[in-house]
Image 1 (cartoon, rainbow, N blue to C red):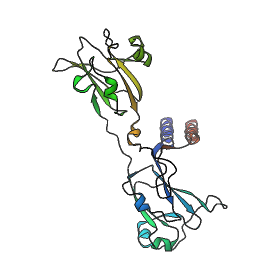
Image 2 (tube, helix red, strand yellow; image 1 turned 135 degrees about the horizontal axis):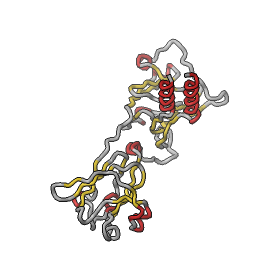
Image 3 (spheres, one colour; image 1 turned 90 degrees about the vertical axis):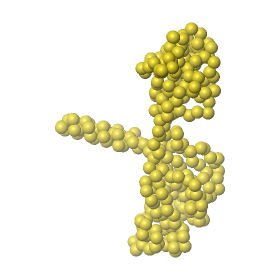
Length: 284
């Protein structure tokens, strides 16, 4: 019984602590008839994206079924919660789910006049890790500018790096930043990996560094002073899909902000789940 309660605890915390990442889009003024079809041309939407419209008490946005979307006929009044009695306009956030989403004007005549839109949302993209050979054909050796090699490249968690070198002359050592700057391998870190001998006589050492900054050099002779060192920044996988920032202050109907953000449950919810689960433990 206690084991079950412990499992419930972790599951509850995991669910409540789950985060969805997406983009915030300001679409425009719904009341003045922003053309959503034109605005959305060429855009791909994923789960976690938010669409923000300026709406009013006289004309808001309703999520409806496909049949209602097609004929703009409904018998029941759709419930709508206004943010405050004294506000006549406000920013309405539309949160679509994966699949096809149908939205119409809350005014039936406007819906029949074409004030509606369908939004197709895809599942969140999945990053496929890449494998890099450090220095490409030249491998890990003096005379290669590794700052130039890493320039204009983005590395993400899960990417792997193949160091190919002559083991009788060079080595691979990870160091702290001071060791990288000062060429002092006493600032070394353990590098996890198994070196293997290649057909061309060189040694292959493969690493999959975690997220963050990493610094590599050779611990042999004056290799570091000769430039045999490299700095790598490993970014979170979700940044591989982050949109390019756009200028702020756009006009209605244009994207004025598309910042990448994380939606997560408040800590109090996770704490509450833990408290509930601990209560279960006490009762078990």
